[in-house]
Image (tube, rainbow, N blue to C red; front, side, top):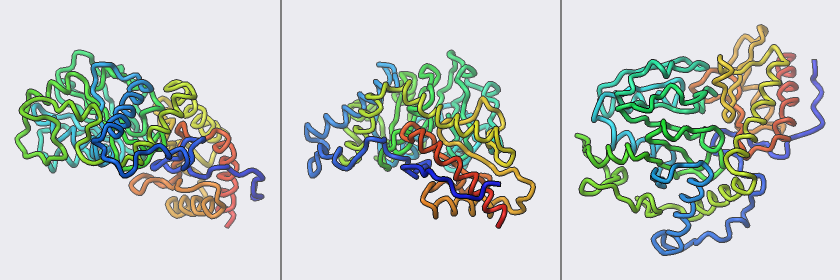
Length: 379
């Protein structure tokens, strides 16, 4: 049993699943070009916002006929905007295998009161996406941030579907392959895989989603902050950098810095490879130790960003207390910050492995997890 502290510490102990670690080359000085004290409607503000949209399209490979907009209130705001403006034209298929998906179920069933079929799976498992009725609108998360369970691919989504697919991709974008032809609405936030600042969301619409917006008006009133059309036509300015409300130009600059870093290392394929390598190291660590395991039951659905782990040792009598003690001990040593499981998830650890996390830091962290586990077991 190893109870001696490891010699090597992570250079960056930030393994939070949101806000996530900044890119390795990030510095405050890199934000010096932000047009602070200027209107976002001035030419420089519009150009910065348009650049953020263009770089997002380039790195993610978003089709040219898809619209990309910057909207308020992070991924939550973007997804709520999509649900409130597009759902209701037909029944919905609501999918949840973790807390954020469950939140979307609540909004549709209890707030919008749309006719819906709810499909749920427990933490660690995933809904059978092939069993859904895609003639209805389908709402789902691509990567369950709080469960570490992700969609393995989009093959089960039919190309000739009649309904729309609304995908919350906030912990998948820039780290996992998103099949754009299968996604009509895609949302994410800056503070996840690219380590940007919070409070801003991205809304990506397929031509089918735009058609829905221009042909259907929901029965409920829409607050100004949700309105994407005017006189039955899409407000195109939103998707050219003319945001609905005032964005933080400092946050925009921060996102641009992250995007340019991602572009400089090779774009989407390089970002994905970094996340895969980080997560793979943790998977291998679990395979070598019988006291810790991945929460995701099926290896094909293991997330490469929000890796969720559970302690499996029979000597542990209070799983929640033990996991908290391990996380607290690691934080006290300054080797891992904010890696406790999400409050609604099963007890354990959640380690962010996105592209902005250096592989060397993951490798340095793993012996510390073993030390903390052994120290708590012996306590």
